[in-house]
Image 1: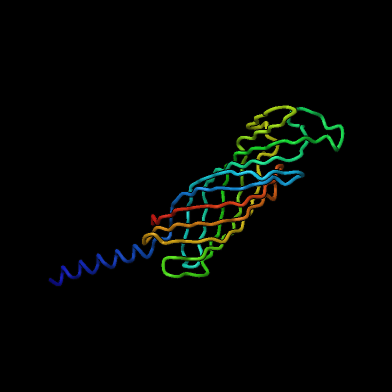
Image 2: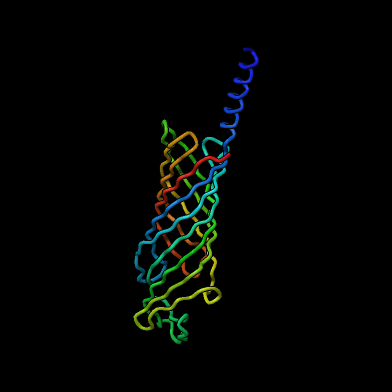
Length: 207
C-alpha cells in the first residue's frame, strides 16, 4: 500500500513538474492589413498574410516570439518609370504606378502582459522584422504590368518595426489565442509601406 502511494505521489509530482516547465510554444497566425506606400498621391489598399510562430515564454508577464511570415501589400503612388526602362530626364517625370509586393519576413516580437483577469489578458507588443521581397508587380496605364523576381528587383531587403495593443485569451492549460491590432512602418526600404495590421494567432505549449 505504501509502495503504491509512493509511486502515485511520484507520478503526480513528475506530472506537475513537467507541466510547470512548459515554456516553448508553437503556433500559427493569420493577418489582414491595410497599407499605403509612402509617397505622393498614395492609395490605401487591403492585403493579407500568415505565418508560423515559435514562442519562448519563461516569465508570466512577458514572452518572446520568432517565426516566418508571408505578407502581401499593395499601394499606388507617383513614381519614376525606371523599372520599365524609361530614363529619368526631368524631376517631374513621374507617373501613377500601383506596386504589389509579396514578402517573406522573420519577425522578432516581444509581448508584455501588464494586466490579467481570469483567462483574459491585455497584450502590448513591439516587433522588429527583417523582410525579403520575393515578387514585385508594377502596373501603370502608360506601360502596363511589369513582374519582377529575383535579382531584377532593386533592393529586395527591408526592415519593419511595429507596435500593437491587443488581447489574449487562454483556451486551455497550454493553449492561447492572441488578437493584436498593430501599426507597422518600413524604416529601410526602396518602397516603404505603412500598415495597420490585425493578427490572430494561436499558440500551444510543446515543452
